[in-house]
Length: 342
Image (cartoon, rainbow, N blue to C red; front, side, top):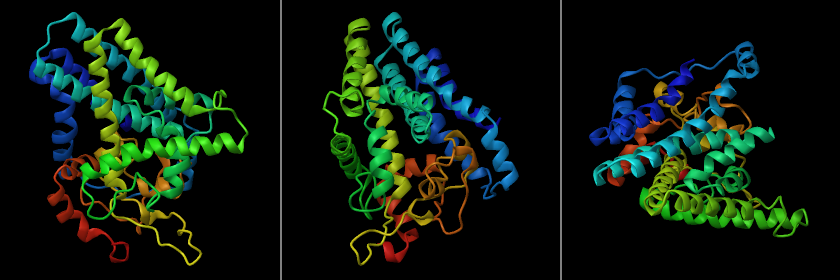
């Protein structure tokens, strides 16, 4: 039941948008002020589950249902926001707050959950994952993350790995452009290997492009220019939140290149881990990212802590805030990177 806390961001965000005024910024304040403060007070949890508990958690479908419910939550938040900005009087300040709050919902409960579902083999779950990527204009993430990032993480070939002493803003440009370009390159290889035409039903990147354009065209057609700009900007906030998380997850970590020219196998030491309990729960254990990259098919409810994983001094929400201030981020994190990786 603790994972019900993962709904706290959309609940607080939508409630704040409903109240209006200063409250429109509620999701932003909750995610990056309240949660970081609480994580300073709450203890870390490094415990792992025994095999019997792991087996029970894998058999319990409630963990999956908790993910599925994010689809109506995310789209419900979008429609509610569109209704408010078109049917009521809202100030420019409120629109900014609504955009930021919805963007955070799209990142935390949209892309983050899509990431989890995108690793599943079940077609239904993969479709839900793709649906959750649409509002953030990031459906190409589905291709690049699974076929690119997990293969090339912590190497120069991965646009989603932040280099040592690379600031967040330079990383944003690298990863947003690089990830999209990489997704098309991967899709072309997949098409060639399966002898598919560009217009084949299995050419995901083609259909992702059509779907993304259709989403924005429909909003413009039925809601108007104001709604179009609103969902466009909220989606950008959503994918920048994702890429900020990517930044802190792999910052400065490198895999050794072997004599053969290939890189060593991905292990638990190539992603930053955090055991801060609140971030773990709200982000569906994304903060145990080291284990996720070590065994990418593991479901969120059984991810483990490993002693050899590099540990973040703060939880993910706090680390995101710190990353916006490069000198402070470097001062805290650079000394924690293993010397052989610098």
